[in-house]
Image (cartoon, rainbow, N blue to C red; front, side, top):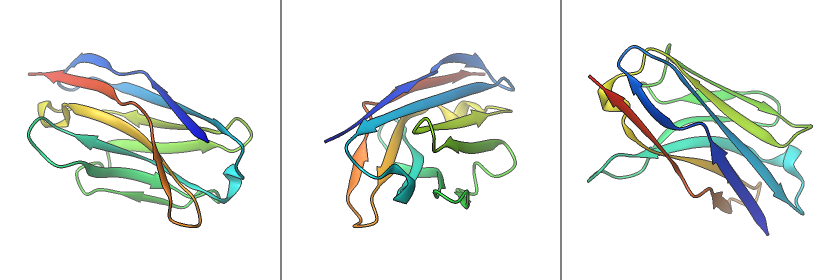
Length: 117
């Protein structure tokens, strides 16, 4: 069983910054996983924000490029998302994600990010 616990969401003004963190626990080989962040705005489908492999390779949505930075600490089983120059359209529930090499995915409970204009 894998558990993902997010923290760091909140309310921020446009142009501001937030840092999301996610701690993973469970009896799996974390170094063989891809971790990432997805988001779901009200009335919209969940979408990829960014992912990072165990070796540090990253993938970003176009909307996140140049503003968001994903990082992970394999020793602590954590993944973080630094979000800068936030925009009102970044408002969403952000979900931590962990994908095993088998393709199985696990999700956190989500953390709300609200960007006011």
